[in-house]
Length: 200
Image 1: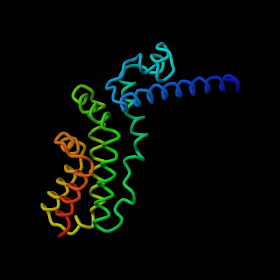
Image 2 (image 1 turned 90 degrees about the horizontal axis):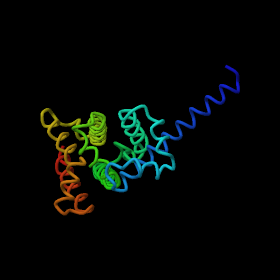
Image 3 (image 1 turned 120 degrees about the vertical axis):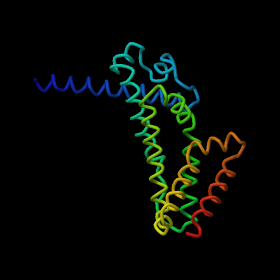
Image 4 (image 1 turned 60 degrees about the horizontal axis):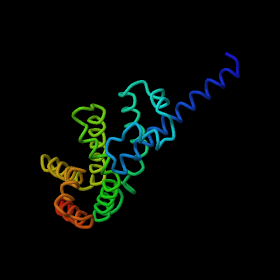
């Protein structure tokens, strides 16, 4: 293969990758805007590509779903982070974890809701939700390790499970449905976690 042929091949691959990313980013944006499962027409219009190109970018529906989930998790990695994880006194650590969760859930509620709606029929969505939940749980374990380390089993496990469940998307969603606003949820979480860990 000559240099010019290799360059053309690399250029085609890059254009295809760029096109795939435009399509996926358009679909993610539409979901986060509250459109549910976006139509093909809406995606190609938002991405600025043709319908024919859309089907050339992905081998099949599973390829599209997997690429969508991978791209989404790449984009939210920084949003999931807790500032100075595990550092500071208990009050500070409670506040930083709760605040980070509330901000993330508020921004990504449409995606989380869609993922749960599709989890039974789409294995990729079910696996992604599981992995996200595991990552959030690990944050809790790290954030409050100074307190957990002083506890004996099974008390430690009970506290870990309670805090992980309390600060989950499902908990946030239920509290929102019950009419609590952001500040009320924040105060509720702070109160409960502090009571659980304050005397450890």
